[in-house]
Image 1 (cartoon, helix red, strand yellow):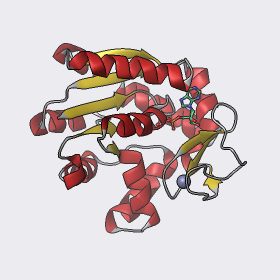
Image 2: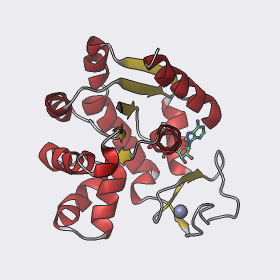
Image 3: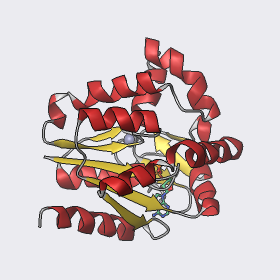
Image 4: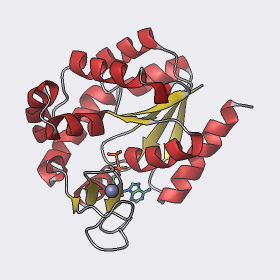
Length: 213
Ligand code: ADP
Ligand code: ZN
């Protein structure tokens, strides 16, 4: 059983690393953002409720998000563990998570503010397989097309600069305080996210592999 949280400000590289970690350790990436965007695209009742929050960079209501996560981690593919990406994001969500389970490790990605904006604005995603690219730092082989499935890449609606800055403020106010909570529990490890994708991945796998020793 391996339960991980990948933590950090918007566009720090959580999704990018989560996809790689998920493959290496054979546990699903449970991304609140992907689950919510999927719900919006499919116009499920939850998706309809949540769309306006996503578009403006606000957080969805805790009870909706917690239910979404509970449903997801009770699926059979999560029986050996999972990697939470984008959850918990508030003290309320983290309290609910503590009631639910024990997390083995929180990978806390640190990246400077201006670098975050640059990463967000250049991000491109595949709506079909959720692969993440960057126009400068992680280009797809053919421009604008997903390497894995050939689907056209898009820019997320919330990756416009103004919304990005908004999301960064929300992170500072509501999410960053969780770092203290994790530190008190003693399961947080700091990751230098300003490095390249491979380097960051190595820092993370080293921390995870130390767990089993
Ligand atoms: P998050 O899930 O934390 O919001 P993403 O994984 O989507 O962040 O990454 C944000 C953007 O930055 C993407 O365009 C991604 O390709 C790029 N990126 C991710 N990690 C790095 C890195 N270590 N160096 C440079 N660019 C990166
Ligand atoms: Zn794809």
